[in-house]
Length: 107
Image (cartoon, rainbow, N blue to C red; front, side):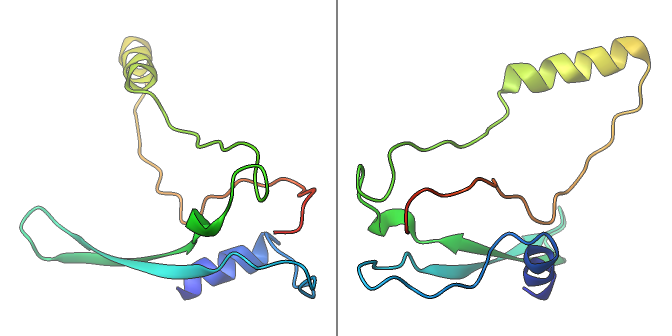
């Protein structure tokens, strides 16, 4: 949790503001996950802060959604390109990922 909060503050992903009178805020919660190794032993603990978006209403709180997901065909193309060019592939674990945009509505 500390790593996640430190990264959110460092990346300036939010501003603390007064809640408008007419707005019911969207709450959030921490989700915890225990990651295990192949032999079943503990590898690491993960924590993620997630918005509880189920309280939103289409057309009132949001108009569209977007979730970037890599398609398997894209992954296969990148792997085949790396193999054909003799590149050494490596994995990157992103500690915190978020989409950044200016909001035009109070949420």
